[in-house]
Amino acid sequence: MPKKILTGVVISDKPNKTVTVRVERKYSHPVLKKVIKVRKNYNAHDENNKFKTGDKVSIIESKPFSKNKKFQVMEITK
Image (cartoon, rainbow, N blue to C red; front, side, top):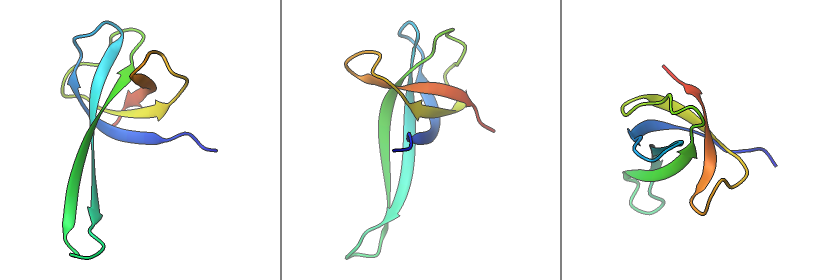
């Protein structure tokens, strides 16, 4: 099974070796036919603490690093 790759914006870099990434997706409601915007926050592993708040990054699913941290930061996207 392929690993999930998500794109979002870093909203917090306070914890050591961790960044919080907000991922936004849009979908059409099946009955109302209205476009709905959904946001979700993911904790991602950042080994060298090199990503800062406001960076647009890609994260990839990986082995669990802790209870809530199951993604790893791949790279900064433009």
